[in-house]
Image (tube, rainbow, N blue to C red; front, side, top):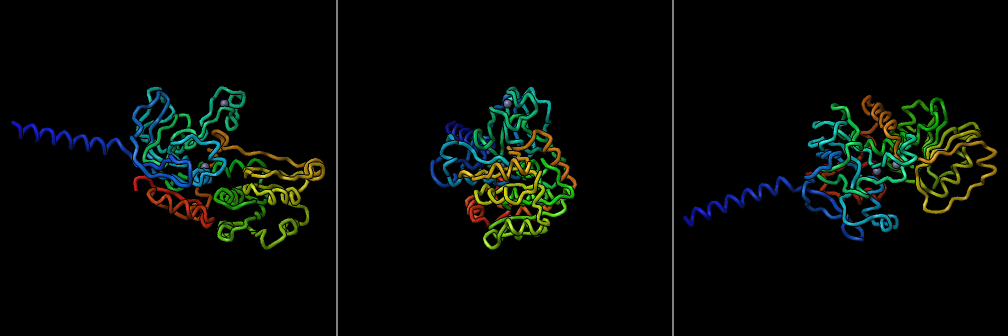
Length: 369
Ligand SMILES: [Zn+2]
Ligand SMILES: [Zn+2]
């Protein structure tokens, strides 16, 4: 009898362990106010609110924001509430839906608009949810997708084509930033400058070519990235460490300057130069975030030139995504060249080091590996 009891207990324990395996997931969390991230296990989110979905993450890509979270810079110190699961760019499969969800179904392959918006403020109500005053960000304000599973509001799902390349699907959110930045002004037949060729700037070069720009001039201080820009179709590449940027852009544009500039660098010097080589009546779209004040000759370089300046926050929900989908589904970009590294998620520290070196394009992680 005693033996039997011990046997039952043993079976019970085995089942508990199995249960544990089925309910826990690998994830990457930010839990310490210092450089680094922690690889750990957490319970798979179980309880869904009526409007939420649970997604099995297939691929997730590393954003500049994730790097700031990793290095714990001043922005991170002021903004983050620890602990939380990092990551916001991904593609994956919907495996469970809340009771009120009708927008997406189990089995859908989705990516996420990472801004969780209120739908009620002045900006949401007038169709400009990308500047919602109550925005929360997945993987910053809520648990993110550096995990095997992520739970998000159904409203934030963008449904992908089932046969699209899964690697490409995971970088659509930053690609949306590039599309939003570059296509705000008309590009066809125009002279375009892309300032800063990190992953999003590289996508900007690609987008400008896809939208039939006449000439795309890429500006970047890192030669690895400048070469990538050239490979994906930049007609002219300029390294400001070696050349006079203003002089060269004017030479390349018959002395008139650039019709449209996509500003991805956030560099004070680069932004100040852009105001000097923008053409009269030109358009300047700004995504890069400068950490210092920028000196601009407002009278001569804005007013008398009659230029237009557009600040880019996130993506237009969901019109930018529709543009992204068209580009991805029709294979109109060189995303295989822009995605330079794919790592198992367990190698996230290595991935962050490479990202920090600047010698990479987009880096993708595979959870569960
Ligand atoms: Zn991002
Ligand atoms: Zn709102």
